[in-house]
Length: 107
Image 1: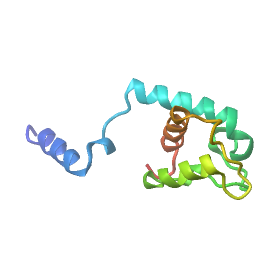
Image 2: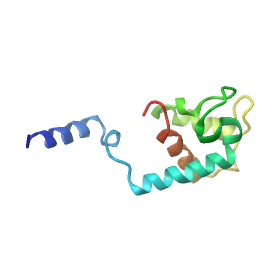
Image 3: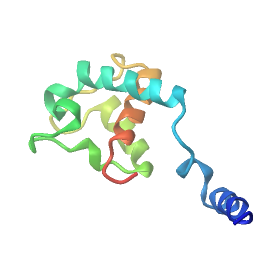
Image 4: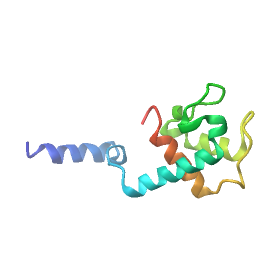
């Protein structure tokens, strides 16, 4: 049993420790700030609490590697979505991403 914890830590380091680390208070604060930004700017089209009406892309489907795609769509617009460049700053965009990822279908 005493070898189990070091082995788990070693496995976590090999797999990328961020996948198994618990959320910190700072992470929770980013997620809460992202929820406020989402509510103010995104919920009208993407649904309250990220629950899509089906008429727009369900943001909960975004995966870890989709951040560049997400940022491009938000900043430059896509299809009927207007560009938010100059409206949302980099910090708001980061917190919005944290909120979306915290509620994503695939962690």
